[in-house]
Length: 347
Ligand SMILES: *Cc1c(COP(=O)(O)O)cnc(C)c1O
Image: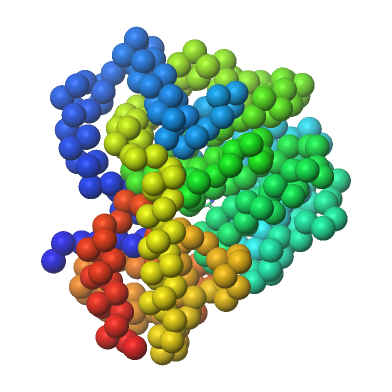
């Protein structure tokens, strides 16, 4: 049977990707020179498309990087004046903290998966770091919390939205640095990340003046502002990003679909034998990734694989007690129906 993937990254790509790949080949994008007019036009169109479809504010800069992991380094290198404080309840937020700690001064703000981030008293830091969607344990930081923090903090706020950007609507005015790699909600193959920077973030980068790395923010801005690249970039991913976003109905429509499916999954797992969603607190539950707690997740994952259904393994501390299901927009309705039919065998 046809392979279906609910892996939360790299994940199912949009069904139109094969067609776009053929177009990329036919139209010459696979071998286009990244100093050519064709490339510059593609970059300009892609940035415009991101602004239009994801509602990125006009005064935010857009740069392209190669992964979310690279974004962690870049923020520590180029955007952190003194120190960064990291709120995290799972593996990705913790890895961000560990990566930053090798480069700059950091403050760890770990918190319980079932609770909102502890922001009552904010640490004295130049940058506050949040993982909006913690892919490892399917928890999320509500944007209302970011709104509250924004009012009380005048440093920079950085938000990892690797597994939520292009899946749910994000209010970019609530923070200064937003980034995501493209192999999750964007529904295209891995190998690139996008980063959005507020005017304040750009000012801070200029004040710090870091130019010692090929991926310094100032070097990136010098190039991407002119629709050029500081190195030979992943032109194919830029092209696929452009085509998939152009085909998108916009983030409001995408979010509507994602939220409706999420509600459907919640109803599905209600009174479902020994299965249950974590976090149990719906307030902090991710909309784009589900973690299902059950007695023997390994067995479920293996049996699903026999039927060509790929599920996500548990991650980090939740490795042996959960499996994960991506609720990314590229997944088809009929694929969800197939997975639910399979899961009903265990109830
Ligand atoms: C997947 C993921 C990352 C890592 O992305 P890479 O593209 O592999 O660097 C970082 N943060 C979160 C929240 C993720 O889900």
